[in-house]
Amino acid sequence: MRMSGEVVRGMIFPTVAVITNLYTGFYTLLEHNFNFNINHLNITQLIFCAMSLAADIILILSFRRKPNRKKLVDLVVNLRRGHERSISRPPGSFLVTAARLVYSRRTYTTVFEPNISDMRIEYFEALAENHRGQARWIEIRGHLIFVAMLAHATASCGKVVSKIWKVIP
Amino acid sequence: MLKISGLPSPKEAEILELLLNGQERYGLELVKASGGALKRGTIYVTLSRLEEKGFVSSKAEKIDTVSGLPRRRYRITGHGQNALSALCAARAAVYSTMAPAGG
Image (cartoon, rainbow over all chains, first blue to last red; front, side, top):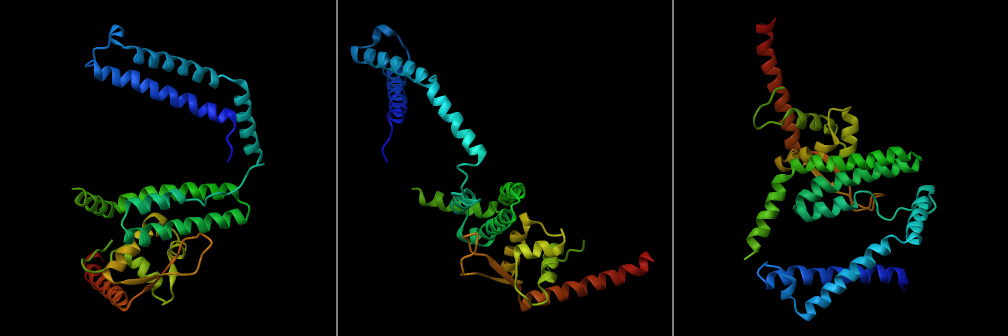
């Protein structure tokens, strides 16, 4: 994928700003035992200070550019009109990842997996009947149920945490 | 609600009664069949507990479902049927002893 000039500029300036700010800020302060004085800076640190300031100014100016804002507005309008509407990931994908990470395999397969499966089936049924509002509600309810289930399955989460704790030397 | 240790709790008994006719059912079917007595948030936790006690057995479907995740079918075991019968008998005994005092 070829990145446009705007994207590259948008990535370079924040990166330079962060690196230079980190250097001039934390490292300089550490070097001088947190007694910051501009007379103590050497030529390299002064150059980094100047670069940091310049990068910050460019960063602020680049956010104020009108074409970017217009593009963003166009994108939002297109999404609202439904021009770009598509399902990329089924609902509950994040919940599956989170439950797999936090809970034991047994708890995941017996408690979380069938629940998310049910939520998806109800969601797709509602979508098939063109009830988008109901589908949205089913998705929100599924997330709320997941939060409620967290309390019921805390013991399993505790077991996983204790296993990880034992592995760490 | 009558709770007797070693026997299913009222919510567990509700699930066992719904599974009593011998057919395998999904968790969502049980929620819908209960008419609001069972909630989506607790059904699988309760079913998991019942499975640990040996009152129900489950098996994951191997075929791909529309959700992309396997669904589980639950059925009551012989031990579960015995536990439910014992609970019904215990309830009847308790209510029969309470009835003359109340009436």
